[in-house]
Every structure is written in C-alpha cells, then in structure tokens.
Amino acid sequence: MLETSARLLQLLSLLQLRREWTGAALAERLSITERTVRRDIGKLRTLGYPISASPGSAGGYQLGAGAQLPPLLLDDDEALAVALGLAAVATGPVTGMGDASVRALAKLEQVLPGRLRPKFSALRHSVSTLSGPPGGVDPEVLTAFSAGITEHRILSFRYTSADGGSARRMVEPYRLVGTGRRWYAVAWDLDRGDWRTFRVDRCTSTPAPRERFTLRPLPARDLAAYVQESITRNPYRYSVVVRLAAPLAAVAERVPPDVASVEADGPGHTIVRGGWDSLDLPLINLTTWGVPFEILDPPEMRERARRAASLLQRAVEIPPTAESGKSVRSSH
Image (cartoon, rainbow, N blue to C red; front, side):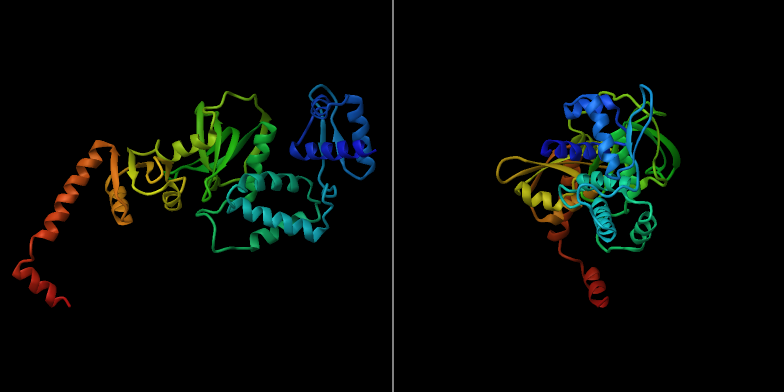
C-alpha cells in the first residue's frame, strides 16, 4: 500500500511537470507497465484529479486545471500566497532560486483552480516593490517560456530589440538563464536559422505555444556561460580584459554577471572580461575603484590609458597661471 501511494505521488509530480505524457513515457519513468499506469490514472481520478486522455499513438494523459494542489493540499488563501511569493522570487530572483521558482510557478499555475485565477491575477498586478531588477519581467512570460522548454513547443511572441524595433519572433526555447538582475532565454530563432539570446523583459506579449519541435544540438555545453558571453562581449566593439589586484569575492560584488565575467587569477588577483563600445568608460570606472589594475587587452586601451595618464600628470604638475587663478577665486 505504501509503495502504491508513493507511486501515485510520483505520477502526480510527473503530470504537473509536463502538459502531456504518453502512457509509454510514464511507464518508462515509473518502471511499471502501461497497464499499471492506466490503473493508477483511474485511482487518481477517483480521488478527484481531472486527468484527461487523448487516444491514438500521439495521444497521452494531461492533468487538468481545478484539481486540489498536490501534494501539499493547500487551501485557497495558502495557494494564492505561495503563487504570489513564487512570482516575486521569479522576477527578482534570490541567488540560486530563480530558475526553481519559475518551474514551481509553472506547475502551480497549471493546477490552480479556475475560481482563484482572477484573484491571483488581480493581486499580482496590484503589488509593487521598490527593489528588483531593472525592467520587470511578467511572471506569465517566464512561466510560458518554462512550459515551452519543458514540453518542447515552439513559442511565438512579440519582441523589442535593442535598437527599439518590434517584431514577431518564432523560436524553439531551450533554457532560461537568470543573472540576478535579468532573465534571458536561449532559443533557436526559426526565421533567422540561428541561435539567439532573448532578454525576457523585452517580450511585449506572452509567448503562445505552437507545435512541438525536435531537439537540436546545443550551441554550448554550459548555456549559462554561453549567455554571459553573448550579452557581455559579442555585441560590443571592444573586448576588454583587465587584471585587478583584488580577490575574486571583492570584485564579484561590484561586477554584475551581465556586465562582465570574472575569474580568480591567484589568491589576490582577478581577471575581468567584458565588452564596451568605447574605451573611455571602462578606464574611468577602473580608475575610480582605487584598485591597481593591468590592461591585458586590447592594445588600443593601453595607448588610451598612456595618453590619459600624461594629461593627468601634466594637469597636476603645471602651476595655474595668474589669470586662471583669478578666474577661480572670482568664481567663489
């Protein structure tokens, strides 16, 4: 009896994880026969869970909305509190919890009873916070991406690019990556025939699911590193590499992951890599930190630093002229 109950809970968890499962896929995941799957589905139905089944080789089982919230069995107020909390964490992620909160929110919204959906929507849109990432992300957009990734479905949405242009995009989504300030989606762009990284807060419509797609080989083994590369270096004119005389922990506190990547270079030094369209701004930022640093790349930045150092040295060594001294005194 205990083994059967544990299997039913595992079956419920699988039904929440993906919109639709074939009997064969469920049997494989649970290490049981398809006949046992049908019998367990029948038991869940008798317990009040609305599980629909579609016939044919392409059919499967689907957990409908309106069920109780397994396995916690939350009441209405508790369900709303959990959903709102997950939405807040998803759009302003706590370290290490953002991705998990999106998956949990997608599961919860799938089985949230219909009577609670309008109240949840009203509460979510009436709550604001002063903290959080720039360009807030709609939790519905995040959960739509999460569902598309889990179910391998093409998504269609309107997207505003960095230059302000807006267009309909059709993509195969593969991963959501949170930087702590923003969310990015790694996807195959069907119109452009290439991999793209989308800033989720630039989606101006909730992604709509389309037909399923066949998985492609990923552009990189580490998609988080792939996103960081694409947003911190690829779009910019200059790739800047500097070595700071400061430990990794101290530098990481000041350099967000969507600005540059950091790596330790011994116990007291850190390598910082980032992209810039101008070499003046990184020089200004680095000199205001008050931390010794070396410019490793590009060579143009070292030459720019030499000219700036010469001008600054000249500014402090040459005494002010009489006329400039008068103008300074008269201005006070």
